[in-house]
Length: 337
Ligand SMILES: [Zn+2]
Image 1 (cartoon, protein in one colour):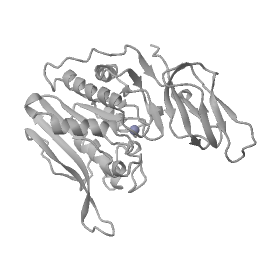
Image 2 (tube, helix red, strand yellow; image 1 turned 90 degrees about the vertical axis):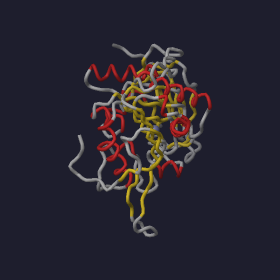
Image 3 (cartoon, helix red, strand yellow; image 1 turned 180 degrees about the vertical axis):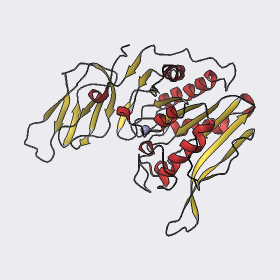
Image 4 (cartoon, protein in one colour; image 1 turned 135 degrees about the vertical axis):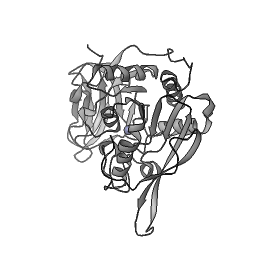
């Protein structure tokens, strides 16, 4: 449902027109050197006839590149005649963050994925989330937010199930994540945070998934291939590419949730961390995960970090230096029930 608040943001594409259009979501801004300018978020709309509408976003975090590359290529290459329905493609959602290669926007310091439902009178990042939430989610059936680990994390390439309270809605989300056919399918609820794009899309009733495609601040072609295939598979599943059925290859039957706060291994002090295991390895609760070596007090013995749950090592910090509280490792567990 659209908010009563009026947004001054405006689109340069027509969401209802058949064919392919490239344009912008324009957000008026008025800084020192540009009194009546706009911040521009690139958007492409590909539409043909009737059918489902899928929104794809990349660059929600500006240092995660697999989504932007996948969505940009799709927008350039897809022939509208191949589809039945509509794609709304936003490769660099928090565009200023992507241009800066940073997780958060350099304009206002905000993490877009913690600003939903957004604010039409807020900062640039809050206005982007508001526009997506109030103007684009209401016209869509499904939403996929393509993330990766970013510059601080390397994650196993995975499709992400966005949790939904209603069973029927959760089943839709699981089905769409499964057809993505990533090596892993993981349920991530960000510790229940309601301010993410995925949580907002679920509130809008959309079939909602995400990805975590490797990361580490670089792009690997193997992760990119998984991401591109997954997007095609989703379009087939939603009927947007009629008759496309290739998703069975590589579908992992297990769904792995992150078991809340126990998933994370946090640094107990400043220093440089040393992890004992590799991504994908089985680990156990109580097992030593690694050490933090102090750089401030080099003659202090290192502090031991332990895993708090059984599972597989799903994510690994890619920056050696830590301060107390930094996330060094992430564990996913096998779904129970
Ligand atoms: Zn992200």
